Length: 84
Image (cartoon, rainbow, N blue to C red; front, side):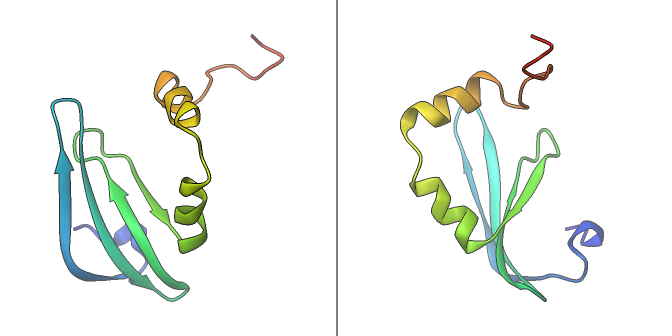
């Protein structure tokens, strides 16, 4: 793993890879100077995010409709609300 964007974070354990016919992700716990984070990476796109425990818990507050909306616009709206 290229640890340049993770500023010295230390991986804990082996990464877990989950995939199906639509997507593949790699998840791994990282210990950072600000506590543990979950690194979620998409090897295909190169996109990644580090999530803290509160951000992960916030996922459990979402409805299935929220995730459907995210899949409909995976990188957000290309235009601001005023531009649409």
